[in-house]
Length: 89
Image (cartoon, rainbow, N blue to C red; front, side, top):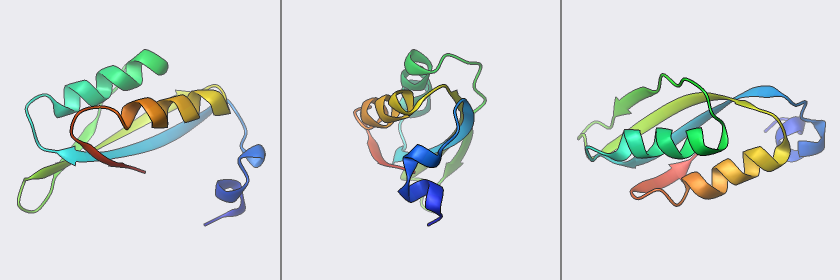
């Protein structure tokens, strides 16, 4: 890990921040993830969606414009509560 990952005080906001959310492959998963992100960082999102090898899971990658550290922390906390989410990077 780089210094900025260990030291959030080194982050410069606003910044573009990539989120990768992995979870169970359901019809609603991508829409639910995007809707939750939009609640906290409104934008026009074009998620990149990739299924796992056996298609049981999906990864959803979104690029979000974040204004501050609190917004980042809120996004991680709230997206983690979306049904089916297993991991956020």
